[in-house]
Image (cartoon, rainbow, N blue to C red; front, side):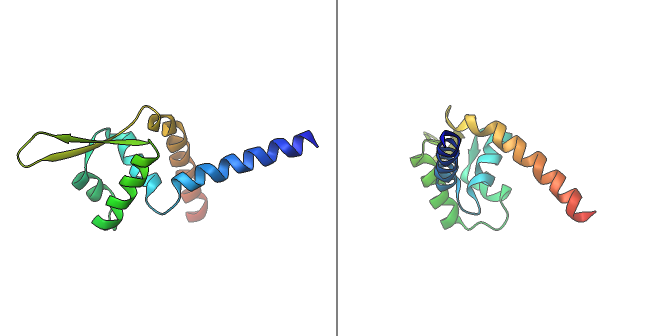
Length: 112
C-alpha cells in the first residue's frame, strides 16, 4: 500500500510539471534557450517556425511567471529585450537533452 501512495505522489508531481510545461511551444522555447542561452524575441520566433507573435508573447509570460525564464530590458535605442533561463530554469537542461535523444531515437524507429 505504501508503494501505491508513492506512485500517486509521483503521478501528481508529473501532472504538476505538465501543467507548467503544457502546450505546443513551451518545451521548444526552453530548448532554444538551453542551446543558445540569451535570446531576443525575434531570435526565438525565428527558431520556432510557425509560432505567432501573440502566442510567443503569451508563452514567454507564462514561463516567466513560473520562474523558468527572465526578461531583461536593455537600455538601447530602440529598446532591446532579451530572455534567458533562470537558475531554476536551467534545472530542466537534462530533461531537454534526454527528450532530444529520445526524439531522435523515436524518429529512427518510426522512419525505419
